[in-house]
Image 1 (cartoon, rainbow, N blue to C red):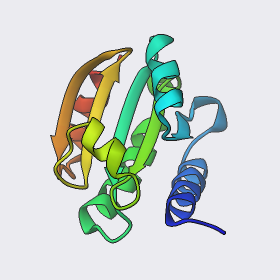
Image 2: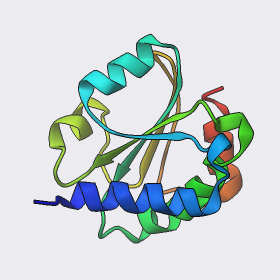
Image 3: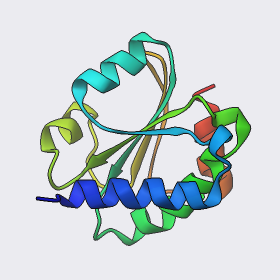
Image 4: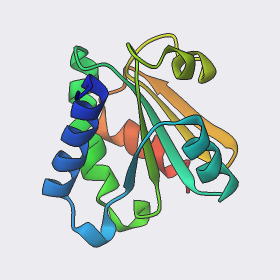
Length: 131
């Protein structure tokens, strides 16, 4: 059975692949506590998006994120999508109060967060905090 999260993740990957040169695409991963901990332990730049399929702000963020993550400087970025409706433990773990929350990490350290942001320059500034 295909979950909403799988459909969202597939759409994010497909959308990113259409806009990005494969050599420069950020790595998109399904959020699991273990995968997140491994990325942090490896010291990777990380972006966590708290997403809901019904959220218009999340839909507005998606193409901006896809375009930004296609940039060569973000090729090592690990992008986790957390389903706001179906991953309540993860939403609580990240302290997100609403969908459309973007959280940047540099390894194990949170470096920034935004809620409801749809401006490309603001989102780019947040992603830059992962480097």
